[in-house]
Length: 512
Image 1 (tube, rainbow, N blue to C red):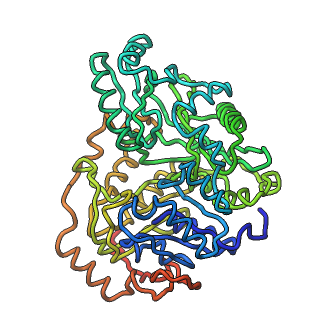
Image 2 (cartoon, rainbow, N blue to C red):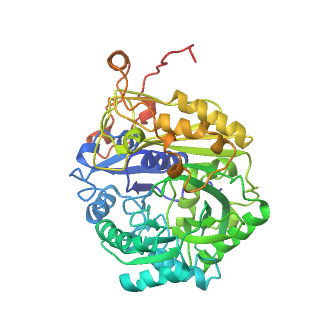
């Protein structure tokens, strides 16, 4: 990896866990970090961790993290040379990427032209076909409800109804009976219109049981694209990923090479640079089919980092500054080593239908130890706002083999404590401890057929537990204190990282 910092100062157009993680990557390269924040996020972890912070005003995403004008003004005000969008918010908005470039700044992501060619499911599918990448039998055009219904009958049930401009499972439905197609299309159009402002739909044959396999790509500005191999993201609920791992237990070296070559072929066709992920479905016979490209850093990128030894944020920064992959990765053995699994810790209640939660986190204790990594955006005494995604942190483990990684993740989940609001920690532990997961007998519809895994006590911690948490918080250091310039919206440097402000605490020590 190149030694000279590719930039002097970078603005992070995001919040929470991913902004903290990018700040860490910047600091490791000697680059100053600038973050932006809404009013309610003034004491958010990413603000406390950064060198500089700029308030955007408002509380909702539309008033803050989605306001392109405010973000560009913050970059200009602080002298940032580049903008990292993280994931979510504006990360896959080609208009934002173009606006950053037009403002004379560097967008740490793919070129807007490549993003546009892969941005919608319809466009990406057409590019995949042209690149010779296997696709699921389906239609690339919205033929109207009548035409799509007729097409669905032609290719046979079950089918997947998908929002053309969609992502994150929004506007997506599996339809098993012909008589349900009209209702599914109508519901999908409503959701797509509300989420993306575009109600166009496409239709594909459903592949099931299927496994969700994705290939991590990194490209530079000189036409080179490298595959950093696969991740498996088959454990999902409502098309949202729950657990991710690398490598996949069912992908051998020959299949790994074929999927990687297909992903690289597509990326080169559109002139893709920076980090991105090509997603595929894998059927029981070993056939894979293209789904979409995520033109950004993925939530699950840490599992790839742990098995390849490559820091993806560092790579993103270097290639955005014009670095060449052949030099950045010279001499590196990129073959997967060991096994890594990531669990998404969310403020939600699986026991009551995965309802998102907000409120005061009275006590936070996150796992630590060999082979354990926690990318967190929360701390004791912080109030989780109701305006954004429910993810609080990511628990990632790495071990020599999958069985050991499963055991390590199960133990680490037992050590994760978030008192004050409901979380999915117990649900994740039940999934990880389940025989199907332990034997890698998983598919994208696993949780749909296992409602028992979401079942459990819906009540939160008792009054005595909460009282103990409040007392420990009062006696220890406050996670919200720190007196750093970033927390007040100033532009001063020398902020203390959030994890350095937290007091140590052990709950039920010696009883595990």
